[in-house]
Length: 236
Image (cartoon, rainbow, N blue to C red; front, side, top):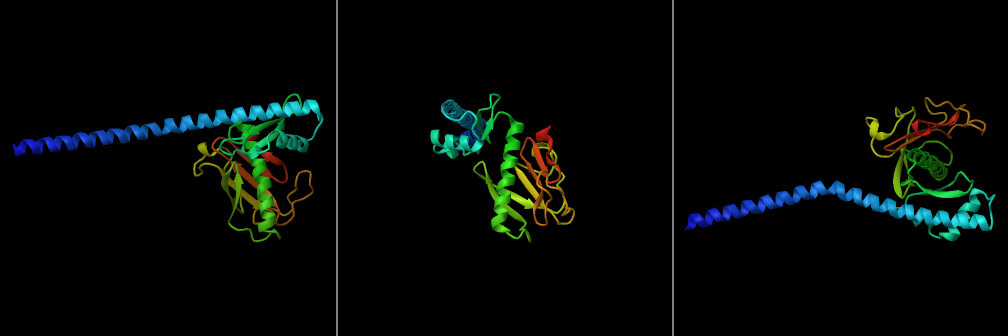
């Protein structure tokens, strides 16, 4: 009788363990599906917000500034959508670009379906934020710290100071040694970066100015050099 009780106890424990393992396996298997569902929900919410903001801008254009500047569009968007930094559910950057009719439309730095354009917009924004950060952190353009931190699409992005160009020309998903979103920059006068590098349309890059910048996400890479502007597969 005791042997039977012991056997039943062992069987019950085994069944419980098996059920726990099955539950864990189902949970692990379900994680990608949950992530995909959440991303889809965020994207749909963002698309709806972009459409509402875009419709508001169209009405504003019709009423007041058909030939308006991008600052006019920003002001109008602020009026029709006061908290525009929160238009995207996950705080993607909101950029304004002209459509085929010349009217500015809002696009999201995380959910814009044009993936190459998304990389280009984020890269240009990141370069500007880096230069703004350097004005405060390295006002004399000397002795850059190893890294500077900026915010892009509501997320912290570490910009690493380098003295030679990085060996990255594509997205991080297809480039060994890189992961996620990465950012690197070089300054004129440092090692391989010539102090006489021409800044396209702006004379020459002086010592201590950013003359090389690379931004890469999982899909594409955007590279800026002060002598010839933007390049990389995001521009091809």
